[in-house]
Amino acid sequence: MTQDELKQAVARAAIGYVVDGEIIGVGTGSTANFFIDELATIKDRIKGTVASSEATAARLKGHGIPVFDLNDVESIAVYIDGADEIDASGAMIKGGGAALTREKIVASVSKSFVCIADGSKLVETLGKFALPVEVIPMARNAVFRQLAALGGQPKVRVKPGSDEPFVTDNGGHLIDVAGLSITDPVALENTINGMVGVIAVGLFAARGANVCLLGTAEGVKSLRWQG
Ligand code: 5RP
Image 1 (cartoon, rainbow, N blue to C red):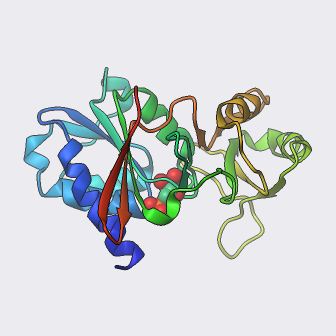
Image 2 (cartoon, protein in one colour; image 1 turned 90 degrees about the vertical axis):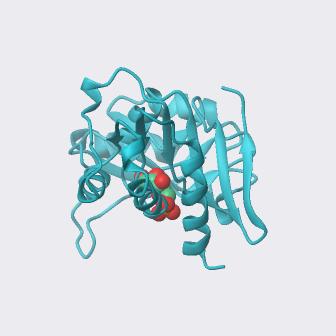
């Protein structure tokens, strides 16, 4: 199976976690896009969605699926999203698609987090994928120096084909930190959250996944954690 077929398989399996009559939180990225396309086939069963990015909102609306502003929603039954890496404890690196801050916000309001990922995303230790950190633009270089002091190799994400910093849906800039071996994801999440000027870090460890649907050649495997 190709990576896209594995992503499609987990997206289809995630429909089993959609709660009828409820609001569903929807992530961002290619796996989340497959999920949105599956969700369209059962859109009449749900009340609507909250999107984790402008791109996701546009795709949901394109399918005629209602998208609510999070400020108008008290709770979300389930949040369904991909990941760049996930470890055996359910901690994840996210933000390769630049949506980490809104993903974290929507996930924080959701009763459970279902991660959908192809098997290549399951790792023993997080950190091979460069860790995204969203920052207030004026704090970019100050945070950059603090991230370098942690031992990684930070790099400012740039717009494709340009030297200009990439700008997120929130007007933030992104620093991707390579070369970290993240043996204590919760501690590192807290440390980076404590840096003034950081909007969010793409470590989802203090609030990790409750379920991971993992696409493998042998079929969709499910991993579960308390929460
Ligand atoms: C976006 C994300 C995505 O979930 C992550 O990058 C995985 O993307 P894909 O499903 O395309 O592999 O965190 O900010």
